[in-house]
Image (cartoon, rainbow, N blue to C red):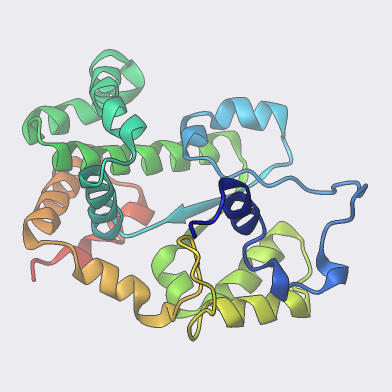
Length: 242
C-alpha cells in the first residue's frame, strides 16, 4: 500500500533523527541562539542581509560547474526546477539592462541562446556577485567546495563549525561518519547517506566533453575580458577536455 502523504511528510522532516541522541534534539520551548538559512535566491541580497544582520557569517558552498549544471539539466529533462528554467530568460534580460552586470554582456552575446550556455553564465554570475558583495561589505564568510567536502567530510565540517563558533559535539562526528560512509538502511528518496569519497569525482566525470568545453570557453572569455574571482579560476585546470 502506498504510504500516505502525512507519513511521507513526517519521514522527510525527521530524516536521520533516529541517530541523534535525545539530548541533541531541540527542546520544545528552547530559545534559539543561532538561525541558519540556506537559500540560493539570497546570493544577490548580501548588502540588504548585512545591513540587517551585521554579525552574520556566510558559508559559500561551491560545486564543480560541470557536476552542478549536469545535475540541473537532468532535472530539467525530468520536468523539475521549472522556476529556474523560466527564470533564465529574465536572467538574460537582467544582464542586458542592469549596469551592475555590464561586464558579462560580451560573454552573453558570444554564447548564444543555448540553455546549457546560459546555465554556465548563470553559475558564474551567481558566485562572482556573491563573493564580490561579501568582500565589499566586509561580511565574515568561508568558501567550502563540494569536492573538498567529499574527500574530507569530517575535516571540512570541523572547519565550518569552528568558523561559526560552534563546538563539534561527538554526536555530530558520529553523524558525519555515518552519513558519508557505507549504505543507509532507509529507502527515503532524499536519503543523504553515501560513500562520499568517490561521489563528487563520479559526478564530475559524468559531465560531457561538450559541456566541459562550453564551461571552459565561458570562463576563459570572461577571464580575458574582466578577470575571474580566484575561487572560480581555481576550476579552470579541472576543465580539461577528456
